[in-house]
Image (cartoon, rainbow, N blue to C red):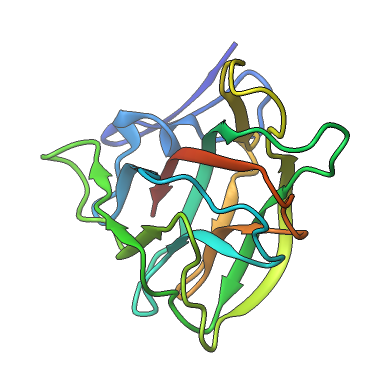
Length: 207
């Protein structure tokens, strides 16, 4: 059973059944005066090339260096489909979700985040999201830990796209401070023949 915290202005917060999270942080009733709830989507219209080099950055998402709040990613969904099948028994591309800081990647296609409410909160401080089927330019970018990884499909073009979902526990979302970012980055050299397409959605809140 949830627990409510009461104040002079009524209910000021809810604690979930596990008693470890203010649900007002992730519900519409908990919109902060600055910040809010957001999502962004991107995709490739041309297949990612064969023989893709290791540490190729294909997508980036960065919180503004001037932000006075934090961003909390709670869900990322990536869809990947084979365009050209790889050799039987070949090693597929390993795609990682990796932290970065120090600079903003450039190139590719810039994406515009969606603000989930037009009347609550404020515009997002995630001011740069972009992707490329080849490689983003990462001059002066400092890469950090790999948060998660997956294998890119390497087989038949007749199979359904593979879905990769990174879903953080509500009590422990992936936290970013000003200047922090996250990217989709290859962790190994890609197969010589395999090509593929990808699409992604990122869901986060700021406060």
